[in-house]
Image (tube, rainbow, N blue to C red; front, side, top):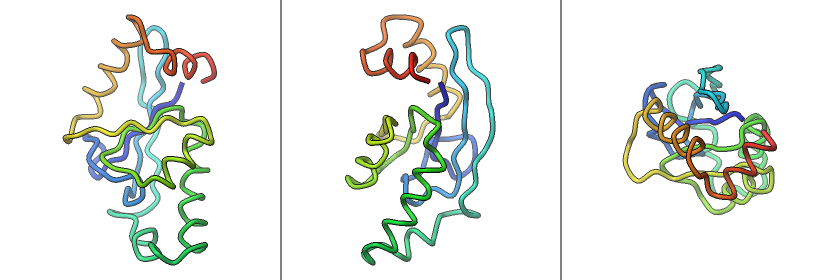
Length: 131
């Protein structure tokens, strides 16, 4: 199963879904996890999404492109996400996970791995089976 992290530095989960210029992708397996790649949407913040906010279909289309390019991931860690974007992710079978404070990607990945080794919640078991 692939897991994405909205990040500004490639080290921490520290960005809003729409503003995120990059996402770090890991593969989570029953016996561990590995870094796969970094997917860049922009250098720094995704200003294209920011500048089109409130412009209706133009903004929606740009957000949808980001969602589509992350659709192979089952979980996305982020600091914030708007309702419409969250709905788009869920429709694709992706679970957005909001974190309250900046956290390291490595630490977040380790906690997720420990959760699947124990007794994961039903939504996570389902994601593991389908991803």
